[in-house]
Length: 105
Image 1: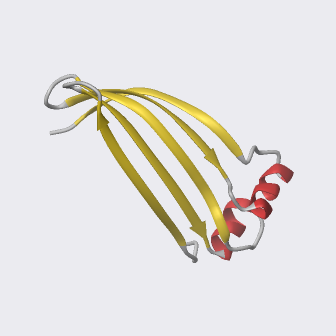
Image 2 (image 1 turned 180 degrees about the vertical axis):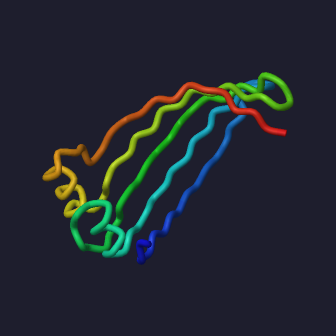
Image 3 (image 1 turned 90 degrees about the vertical axis):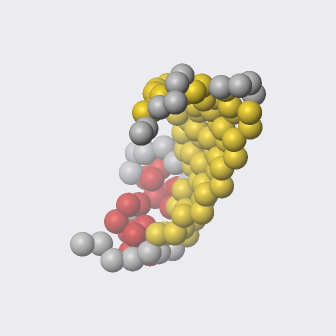
């Protein structure tokens, strides 16, 4: 078991574009304690471990089904933790696309 702390703060907002379509935006900032960062980054230092910005468009297909497309930019704000990833051969930032559907009761 891994001891330590990870705290995450997120904000999100949805804007109506049309009757069944919305623009969805969100942001997230994470903080790791030193034990967590040593496990994930190989560097024992507390700091801002991850941040992301996401924007997407959702379409309510029916009462239970939503179709969506989104893009997310993610990075490691703490330069020491980012350098640790670089030294391990991993990028400390990236951009991701998602296309999908969700279903709920």
